[in-house]
Image 1 (tube, rainbow, N blue to C red):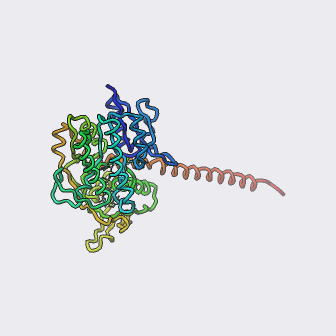
Image 2: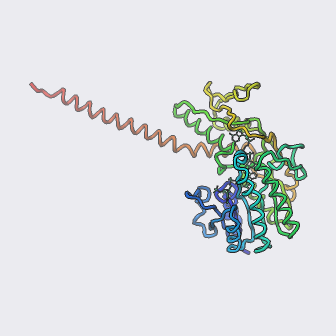
Image 3: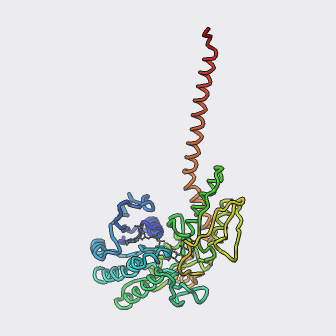
Length: 382
Ligand code: NAP
Ligand code: GDD
């Protein structure tokens, strides 16, 4: 039977990947919600805009009326909530907005589902940031909640409220704790995409004989459990179609440092860069290419409280869903680096071809003038 799937956050990474996955692998109708902006940011979904199984509605998680109106209108069979203020670093600066968007809004959604469409299956995107200051390695569902950021705290609150509604009203409400997942649609402020875009830019600068412009990072020793978002959306869809709703973990069961991510990106771009490590003063550490700094370290990108390491234990989920992520950390880094190198290719090559055209035009002008000069010289004016 054809179902109606409501997805929030479709302009973001996971939402747009989920739309692609469901259009490809199911026959269901997908209703994506976007918030009203002066300039729409539909880059990640523009290829699906004319698909008759995909439509868009305005809805803002901060406006309970808009949630109620949307659920009444759509009567969804599934409500997949990817929308969030998802940037941990910004959550210290906008703690209330983060909490309202990521936690309080869930009460509105769950109340509306309970009152309007109680059979609707609901997905809440939890986070490994809930574990924060970790006590044991790797982390599973039994690990205590020890968030280190307003963002992490908001996701802990989301987890509790989903549990309360699942148990009190027998709603099919899942909360899944996802470890970091990335890809070619990753927002440009997250560390992985910041690295692949900047190193791809630097590679182009070098190929065009320009001096590379360095970029700045914060704590390069933080370790994360990184997977591919395109793998995870499949896991999310599988858990939404199990018999019982419960909590899950999605991870790769491996961790790498930000520095490992940089080293691998350089390898795939064939950038022979070398670290200058200052153990006494991390702010003095830099990555050098032929002695020119391409990455420097700045206090600006350190957080008031850091999560040093995260590594998930996902074996239960692998067993329960009979599923595994298909790509490795190495494949993920390569995919992002290759994508960003190609993405910037046009910028540089259009510039380069404009520059070469200009030279040809000037040479032609000079040749015409030289030939006129010669003609003049050859005139016999006596
Ligand atoms: P993302 O790329 O930042 O996308 C977030 C989406 O939420 C965007 O479409 C954004 O819309 C939308 N949004 C923000 N505020 C909203 C509001 N008030 N009303 C309606 N929509 C709003 O995030 P993501 O990486 O896809 O992550 C998806 C979910 O998984 C989030 O809940 C995130 O916290 C969680 N998560 C992500 C990871 C990860 O590594 N990616 C790991 C654990 C958990 P605009 O385009 O208009 O800004
Ligand atoms: N963003 C950013 N920018 N992070 C940096 C930088 C920098 O310049 N330099 C170092 N880092 C470090 C951060 O301090 C952090 O330890 C690590 O890189 C990863 O940062 P992000 O890519 O911003 O992701 P995150 O781990 O904080 O949060 C992501 O994963 C969570 C799950 O663990 C987000 O997707 C969250 O929404 C998600 O819940």
